Amino acid sequence: MKKIALSLVAVAAFGLAACSEKAQNETGEAANAVATDVSNTAEAGVNSVDNALDAAGNSMDNAADATGNAAANGANAVDNAADNTAAAANAETK
Image (cartoon, rainbow, N blue to C red):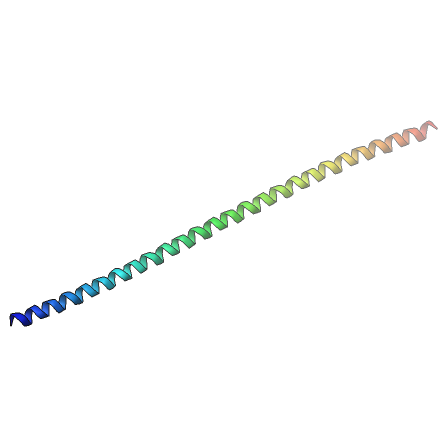
């Protein structure tokens, strides 16, 4: 009787150990899946911020170019006005 009881206890112990190993594996796999999800989410966040900063930099470059063009156009208009005034003054003195 003791041998049968001891055999049953041994079988139960091996079954419990196998179950625990399976549970540990599943827990490890779940932890890896969570770590992968966190890593992917963080990478997507970094990419979004990087893209936003690139877009902001491009907008600033475009604004600077537009400001430079406007200043050049204004300077040309002043120069043309001065030329026209000088030409008109010369025409009146002749």
